[in-house]
Amino acid sequence: MLTGGPLDVLTGDYLAELTMLILGRDRLKNPELGYAKTFLRQLEEALGLAHERGVRIVTNAGGLNPAGLADAVRALAAKVGVPVRVAHVEGDDLTAREDGALTANAYLGGAGITACLRAGADVVVTGRVTDAALVSGPAAWWFDWAPEDHDRLAGAVVAGHVLECGTQATGGNYSFFTAHDVRRPGFPLAEISADGSAVITKHPGTGGVVSAGTVTAQLLYETQGVRYLGPDVTARLDTVRLDDDGADRVRISGVRGEQPPSTLKVGVTRIGGWRNEVVFVLTGLDIEEKANLVRSQLAETLEGVADAAWTLARTDHDDADTEETASALLRLVVRDPSPDRVGRALTSTAVELALGSYPGFHVTTPPGPAQPYGVFASAFAPATEVPHTAVLPDGTRVPMPAPAAPAPLADPAAVPAFPADPAAVPAFPAEPTAVPASPAEPAASSARSAELAAFAASPAFEARGSGGGAPAGPGAEPRETVRAPLGALAGARSGDKGGDANVGVWTESAPAWHWLRDALTVDRFQALLPETRGLAVQRHELPNLRALNFTVTGILGDGVASGHRFDPQAKALGEWLRSRHLDIPVDLLPPQARTATAAAPASAAQPAQGPAPVSSSAPRPAEGPASAPEGTGP
Image 1 (cartoon, helix red, strand yellow):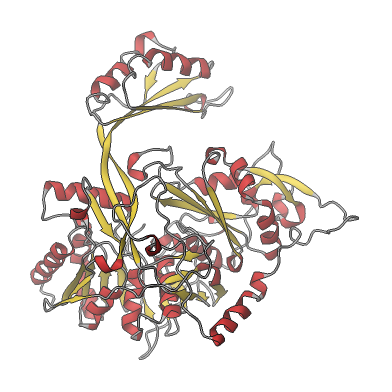
Image 2 (cartoon, helix red, strand yellow; image 1 turned 90 degrees about the vertical axis):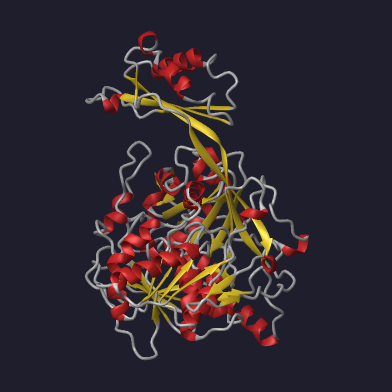
């Protein structure tokens, strides 16, 4: 990023729910650790160049010990002979308040970052801030925004959300990847303007693509509801507008912001117990019978184990021409509070069946010891009780004020972007009114009310259609349909939030959107993804993006570290949905997909995504936009 073109701020996002658990274990071994050590190795190569080019560096690599990482950066700077001013942000660590927690960290906003940059910091290290704060904090510094500039802050938050997972915005993990060369996608950057609008682009000559589709996919990633709650502002995702701005340039505008909630999300990790697993390979004929034999042989051994889950993946094919494609996988996962009950003795017993079980018996790995697993839960803490503090380059400590209490709810039925896990008891009690279902719109003037009313009446909020232009009424001619995968028409991206999963689905044309909006109901979604049946599923419409967003509560159990599911972070849940077949109007499908049938679910050709990637990036003008590129992945 430093050598590819002009930058003002280089950001690095190193934290995820699983990362916090890993850093927590590091801190148990050595209290001086708890930060992302890889950042220091990368910085050793980049610090001199960043200083030479006047690029500020903002990162959350401080993890559980931002002060420790800040000291390590100072030591590194002295070692390589680069004079830099280092500041850090702290106060997010609430572990001492939560009995039995490995880590407990509040998600801070960008205000502390802004204060550090205003004080002249060249490098700002934070702990657990929201991913988007790495961009909104520098933007507020650059343009001197006030905490009340909700629309501007919301625009920067949306830009930060697009950047936070790096190359996921430039063609990585993209449903329509076959339309582009994404072998080495470049990292995205945002050219942010004073009004909060932004252009997402990438440096010239880098791979991948920036398109409305790639930006839409990332906007839908790991969000829940139309209100994206944050510590500095609540961004209304249903107001986001995307426009092409040239090759590999997508403009984001129109984002509306509301007051932030008076509480902060707190991510709590714990050691949940011990787990182990064995994967048996079943080859050839009688797969079900072979699986049943193993289950019965291990039934007595598994008595007393707290949780034992069997999964049979039918990866085998009839009359296969290789042994691997003739084989299925039977997976046993065991969990227990005691490592002894699920330790090597159990896995050894499984392997010792080899000479007295099904024909062709073998397993994928030798017997192994039990491994600890973690669980993640969300709680909430009043913002006034979280000591968000900016520690400036000269050591001055500046407390950040908590946001003002939100006004009464504008939409009581709205669902927050980060709802608490219904199964988890909040670790930090608050008054019932302190955690609103959705933050309210501030008490608005009549002009503001009229403006919002006009916006709500815009074409983006048109009345629900009859399925994308299909004839309606008693004498209407039936619309011709064909059985085809949903992915022939729609893109998707999915991910995790603790034990929940989200799936965003979008289309590229208005007629396809009208059909999708009517066809993909919650009932249809659960029918296509049977694993979601019996779970609470919420659906949200985002007409500006021609998208639906589904939240599936509890499908991931206690979160990624617990290994509850085959795909523990739900990264491929959206692609599974796209592979499912349903009746799609022929006129909506690309020509190559119109002959698709359930019996021949070949990959359909993808919709055109525009020209081959050709990047452009304008130099920084004297009063131009701040460019905030992304660091590492999610």
